[in-house]
Length: 260
Image (cartoon, rainbow, N blue to C red; front, side, top):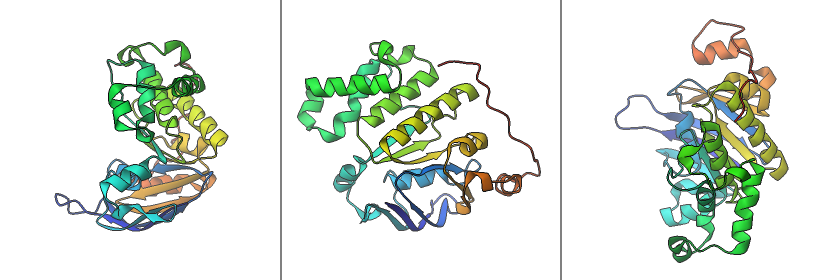
């Protein structure tokens, strides 16, 4: 379904490659967490997958199409298959929750309708269903700036769902959230993933979250794949190798104290 073939990316301002000969294959139904230290290449990998960053060499093949060589116009059509959530939410603060969610439909509509803000009854109902799925229907008329961080990320998830994606991507979506809220967001993502049988690939800095929710872990170091396997095989020794530490028994249990 998704294949990365010898993917490399070099920035002119850096001596070391951000990605170096990364080859990976992903299938529908996998819930993949990407681990690694800051600067390991996690965000670059996600941005190459959805075409926000073009690789220096290699291919990103999505449903048998090499998207790394597509023109921007064609790439926009491919991105309709890809839901994306970010660490900083990418929402419009002064607009309502409901309005922000409706924006998720823009890629499948005409530019004129988007500009005029014209939505059909069916589209409005679909947006409300997405808010129900993330348990924010009562906050639909709140402005984004009135929400907590966890609620904002739920809005971002609802917006991405309106694209009806086949591939769900996350670039450190819980990095700014507390542990309890992060766990609840991952529970929501896992539920959506299972119900819609998506391919989900998420960067995460929390190893415990990855081991709890992922069906597969990929770990990067200096732009290279150091580990690719089952969560139970990601041992303390693997952790020490990837994070350059000798510490073992490092995981902090996730606490359920706060509610989003």
